[in-house]
Amino acid sequence: MVHQSGHPRPHTSTRFSVPVDAALRDAGWRPGRWEMEQAEEWADILGTHITPAGHRLSVFPAAVEAWAEFGGLRITAPGPGRQIAPAALRIDPTAGLHHARTLADLGRSLETELSPLGEEGEGQAVLAIDSEGRVYSVDHTGDWYLGPDIDQALKTLITGLEPARLTSP
Image 1 (cartoon, rainbow, N blue to C red):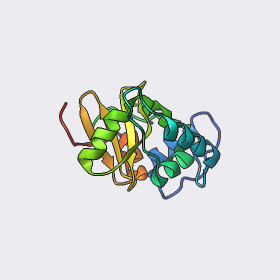
Image 2 (image 1 turned 90 degrees about the horizontal axis):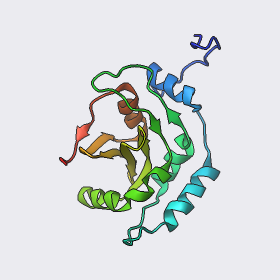
Image 3 (image 1 turned 180 degrees about the horizontal axis):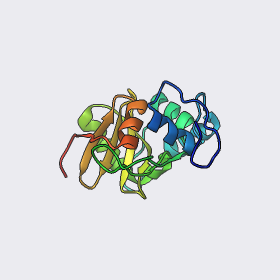
Image 4 (image 1 turned 180 degrees about the vertical axis):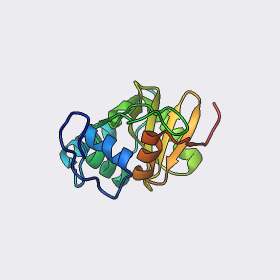
């Protein structure tokens, strides 16, 4: 398979569908990617951050693992989306630094802890992961469930599947 740039594309993995795999590889992901040093830096930043109102962000293994594998990637969907228009994604938990209270409130309502994962678009939504690895998006229209794990969440976001609404604004 040849990429639009004319360079051969490595064979896709079976972990993701072709469009999701292509979008991830175009962003710099590869199977086995593990940037633990960066993930630990983020864990330190988030673990010590306290908002002016005293809210803290949660850090736990599921979040650190997602940051290690996908952190730093800017992912652009390869097409228009199946049900909704997909937004560009940036996997960087510091995008959620100013959402500590929002994530804590949603975590309480879901009876779990949430940690920031990144953002959709230019801050239109904050992405979050819970201690079980489930992924959510929070925007001005409400809270959304993206999937039971990072793989399904990426599929939902990159292919433009309609996520499940958790709350109304």
